[in-house]
Image (cartoon, rainbow, N blue to C red):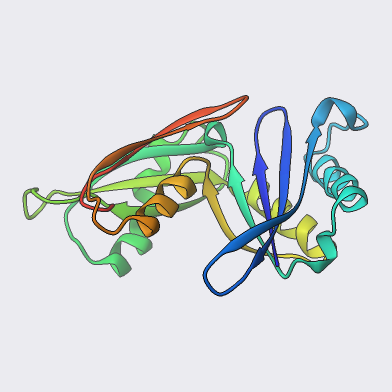
Length: 194
């Protein structure tokens, strides 16, 4: 079973998902609003307290892994043009290339990228990047591991929904995915299945 944590600015929605051969079922769900938790200035303690609350209401211990849907407001998206298309080279230079484009350059970020589809000039390869504050990611990883759950995927909200739709319909190449939530709405554009 897997734990899905849909994190937004006001709380966390948790789902326990049981996977079968061709389908997945929601076994349990729970919503915790941050205002119901004891106040804490320390994000590490706050997130750990939220997980403890969730453990009291759903069977977190039965989950071998977790998928975290991060609030889009905590992820910085940028488009860069780079002089080469080697994924290995891009991974090496990405921290340096993106540093000046991030909201607070003195903070350490974890970044990933995806190529944008052609056409493009040979020496100007466009990539879209997503960066999150490294200390926040480490907080999620550490708190989940304390509760016996290994994070498998961390992705911005909306992106996961779009990728699921791509898996479901292999004939659709381009679409706009609107993920409308109670507290956050996300638009994801898919072009050539990317």
